[in-house]
Length: 131
Image (cartoon, rainbow, N blue to C red):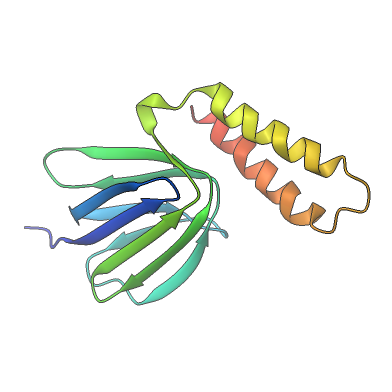
């Protein structure tokens, strides 16, 4: 039997999920990474993309997250995200709207965070391909 651990996913609007899971696939800033039971403690930024987790025999759940932060410590995973949309409810227009908002910000002269916005736009474009 696979060991389970606690997962909490909280968005700015609500608690998205709380319960025991077997694994979590996270869109980390440097690439996707898998969290299993007894994972080493860590804190990481989360880029826009798809978060997947398995509760076991009930199958996988998939959410589009627009960014956030994850903490892993003592078989407890806390994920705070800007927004989360259940995978089967994600439509291309949701992600396209986020890309358009970034384009508007990039068009502002003297914007100080163009590099960060450009990276976020690239992540959103990759997520758009997965819808």
